[in-house]
Length: 311
Ligand SMILES: [Zn+2]
Picture 1 (cartoon, rainbow, N blue to C red):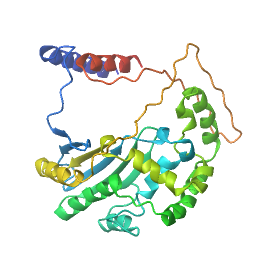
Picture 2: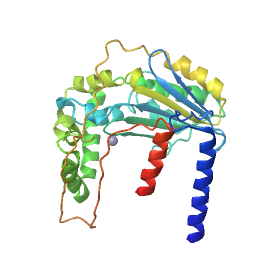
Picture 3: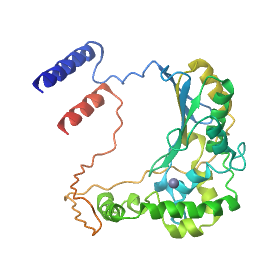
């Protein structure tokens, strides 16, 4: 143990020494030169990195900077509902062809094709074989469709309601009941407490399809999205492909304001004790709230290291 501690300390000191030679605390953190970062005219960002292992494989991710906290009163649960709809019918993959196509390349739903919806983001990802250019192009087309071509037909929406309701039912239990109680305290009257991603089943079962389309229209737009691709390909070629594919999405005129829900500060320590007859475990959790702060300079990074060491 002692040896390991000493080794860690030596490593930290030598890292600090290297940094001290070349960087001032006020310097901006340098961008990794192996990552190509760009912004299209429509506002969409992209990040590209060549990575040769595993061979002939790549991961394509679409990040939407919008989640359940942006839902209106009649949309509770519809950020997540939209995520489901992306896998059903899109312009270039009608009649559930998207999943069939991805599975035909050997991708399985779960490990290789997946998505999640959180309070502030919705993220979609696929793993694509890169040994055939057609797979790469079609993989980008899948992301393009998710970003701008989900059709949201009433019939398909109605067919999905039961599936989401079942997902909600599966999530019920002691942990869910206790979590709802403590999140209410943790989020302290903020919008977060009222917008758990699973939403309400009244909305999921009965919402007007237009409410779902409104969420997609308002928040799935290029200035709130990024494409991230990492894998075994030529980065310059990939950049050109991304520019060609995603520049087709028009820039949004007069977009709705992307607001950020606050979690208000408080002087007192908030405490929540919750129990449930079905709970299999006892658990204590402590949260420290901090102002949201971006790591931009060397000094910020130093702060991050200090607080990690303290924790
Ligand atoms: Zn789901």
